[in-house]
Image (cartoon, rainbow, N blue to C red; front, side, top):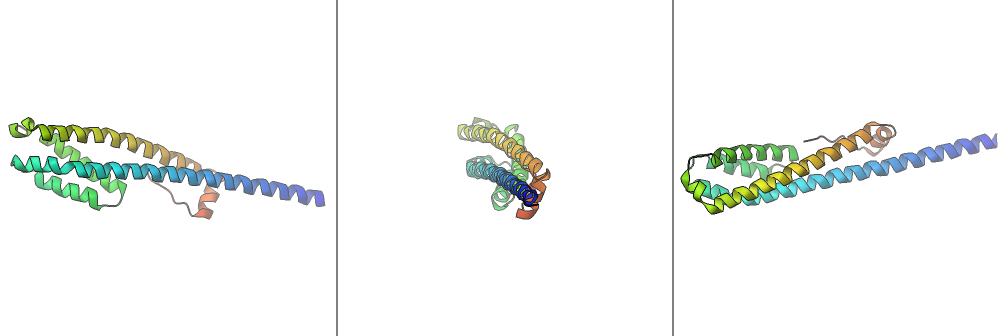
Length: 165
């Protein structure tokens, strides 16, 4: 009888140890997702800081679309969620595509404006790379969270689900 209890105790110990290890892995995945989100926020902040020269150039050229871009820039900075920031950034990107295709000769000849557009495009590439990394990490986290013992560990530790952007 004591040997059976000893075996059951050892099995329970191994199961608890396995669950704790899995929980640490899950917590590590969650930290990676949060770090990727921080990288995205940093990129949004840099883009936000790049926009004033572009906006001023557009306003100087008397282009009527400057006001919506100013509002979108403010929105991108004011909102907390990455999804809302990404949405505002996408609309800003659309406006700049429209502006860059404009017939406004003064904008096309403004070297500062063109340099700022190139810088914005460089940040755009970094943003899309960071977004792919974020989404890949969310998928790994969610896959582990949905499998046993991840589902149990997530419920016990109150680890909520994360969404891709």
